[in-house]
Image 1 (cartoon, rainbow, N blue to C red):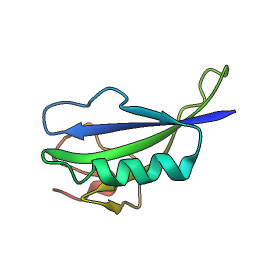
Image 2: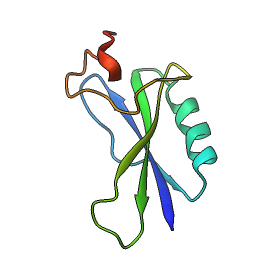
Image 3: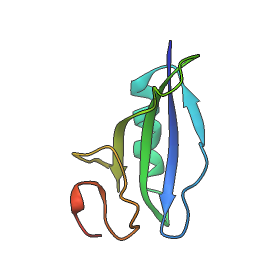
Length: 86
């Protein structure tokens, strides 16, 4: 069974997981809404398989309510996934 975790990235912090869903579409809807919050650079959805180590994988990333082509945020907080500067 897979679960989908949602977290937000701000300019000075990556927040811990805010919610965990069993349905990918519900996680993506929540992340889309969170990505519109003040101060949030992006909200991401990550898939985990229960009881299986090493199964973490990026599913989606939203910036200002729009799904991005790459489901991750660079370690540089000034650059979104895919190298686009904010």
